[in-house]
Length: 302
Image (cartoon, rainbow, N blue to C red; front, side, top):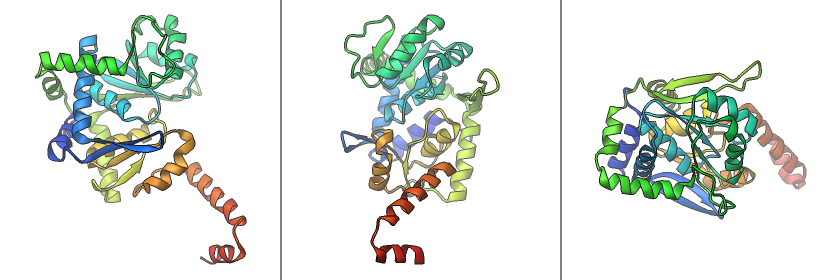
């Protein structure tokens, strides 16, 4: 499929603007983002990042859990021809230094105070890191370091920039090609420094489309995004397939509520490594040992 992720987004926004694109659980309530909402958010973020100086071919670090606005930030960077570099949210600051310097990253978009503190801690070792934006402002009210700002400010600036330059976003998206680099993922670095692995729009979309065809996925699927966004598998199953198929991606409230959220969502398509299924089996077996005799006999019989 010779297309790009931003073009797929705009296609969904045009064909079914009020359809659900993502859901995020916040304070126990699922909040829905439509395809039209997502397209407007991506445009605002792209224009804001462009005004701040992000340009085609540059790299931008993204650190956090699965959140709609972090997905939108990745799409915004790709819309400008920039390359998102997802890093693991549980990595310590020192582990982020090499990827940031290796990719010559000037922009970082992170989820919350924990990630902001991590970036500020290593900033003196990453002199080119000049812009840090955060999604969740809790605990950051008194932070006034240069180059640090909230995503709300970035979105507001982007909307104003879009009004002044109404064709900027569409023009940038149209310049994108399927063979452009869409993302860079760093290896674990167990035998040396991490290595940056690049993927184009074509490679990610092609693999996602092949998998979707094999599993007969449609836009009616419900998916729970709970694995680290920095893992390439998560990007194929909850990002590339999301945009290829147009199904709904559900983001859990936190890692502690994944099992509760799993029951509420009832995903029709669930991808997990073996250890997750082993954990589910163990949980079921332990709970059945506490069940009544009749339930235990029925469980073991079937």
